[in-house]
Length: 245
Image (tube, rainbow, N blue to C red):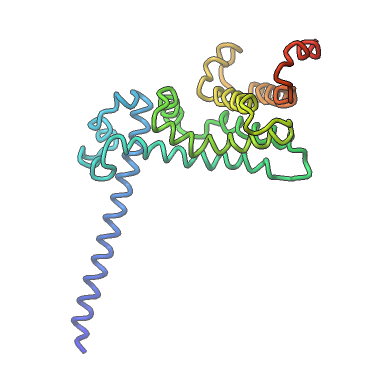
């Protein structure tokens, strides 16, 4: 048997595997750099202002890398949104899991805890500031990138919260009034991250920390324990004012 030949073939295969592995590693790095650069650039100037040349320069790569790795600027933009969506989905899943935790605790209390978890996720700002600005821009445009983020991360959380609220409020999960109230609470919580300047200036705060976090948390507690999600007949306006009085 020609062992020298076998050794040569084996060496060639090993070199090929190493070359392939090295190429894949470089390709993955370039893709990652382009996605991170896209988040930074879009956060700063928006999708329309983010030229492919600016994206490539920010990623420290060639202009041809965008069509090679993603096909187009739009696909790169959606890839950036997908990365953020996957991360947000995991964070929100942690909050949604509280709805299933300790079934001996009333569902309304678990609902409240889930919302507080979402609130703290928003207030922690553990993610890069560019991520916040990126999401804020595509949310304002309500474009395909935000549709992707909403579908992957926000909608599943909203669905779980609406279902839970329907169980302890007596409303149907298809009740638009209930859905609107749950969405309103979520929107208010999201605003502490995306419209934080309104709260900071309105309350004369320098930052949202410590005592500010406690006050906001107490507010969400109070909202959850109010009759905001309670059952009211469709024509109960006059009665509601009487009860409130």
